[in-house]
Length: 438
Image (cartoon, rainbow, N blue to C red; front, top):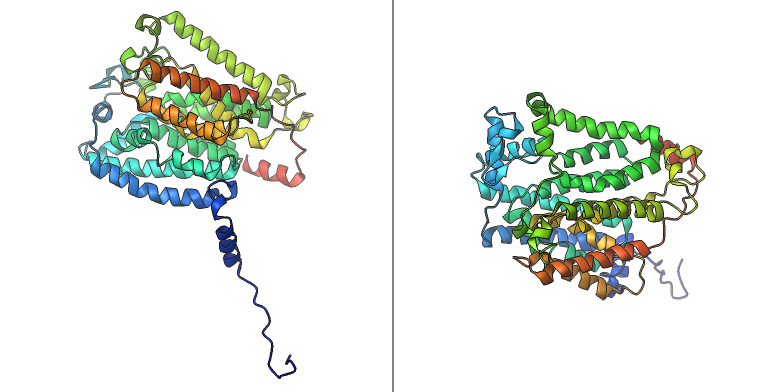
């Protein structure tokens, strides 16, 4: 329509959605590192930055041989036809990992020209590291529990974690990569597939069993006793299937070596108990005290923190449809990470490569605590002290004591957090989706 002067007025052009997002981002640029909704943006930048960091580490920092050659010797024994686990060993001692480890590292044996091409192995572990970060970042993105600036400490700032992955080539990172994949499946509701992947992680290294109490609680909470049993059979079946060649040859030898819960650790490598005299560190009664403390703490958390108020623990045995209080979905990650963390707190010994067992879960646990006075700066300080303790080599009385103090603070904060609230009733649509997945 023309105006008085005959000039046609232009109608206002609405900005595109992308322009709107960019405009909002520019306006809130000072909040990008603090608002959880910018998690995806920050972790994307950090993930691509990590590609360059890992390549630089491989090119500039010397590789250190610790267990890689022993791994190759152990799987070479299997390749040569030895299926008796008591006869399989490497430079550092007998083979003490389950069968999944054998298959994965046999593949790495062939890919790296019988373990000789270590540089190629380092780049393969770089891929493992980047996949692990993607899986971890997805968990944090889904939960939106932690401010984005913390992710800098989750990846770029940790020398020890980069070392464990690309300078040492331990099997621990492989187990944790599979574990985080399983956690992603659990939070998406794919419990059977997640249990299968969880069992595969256990088959690489037994430390993943520290997540088992939390997983059992979640399965009972989600399905009740009768529908949990098939999920547990999936876990057990995968262990039997993977270990079958070794079980047929020497079943007692396989189980006693691959799942040796009583293995003695050497005092010189301990990160967490350096301040104790060696005789006490090696004492069996001390080990039993730690085990009792571990189990008691798990029970306290299960009864007082994981279970919702007003709910009997025996309600978990019933089918969810017959309960007064339904499962709460947003506690899956917290329960799994807490279960593992409690195991770390009461571990008989922690070696340097064990840091990867809980490193990526620490920010989640710190920001899930119930102490409001634990400000951002104090949380970051705790992360820094833990990192410093794990980077002190050899460990000292001070570094090991500081590690325990940090663990105790995190554990107390988790205890002081409010118990899980009751969940609202499921809609028919939600129930149909869940039934389809299971």
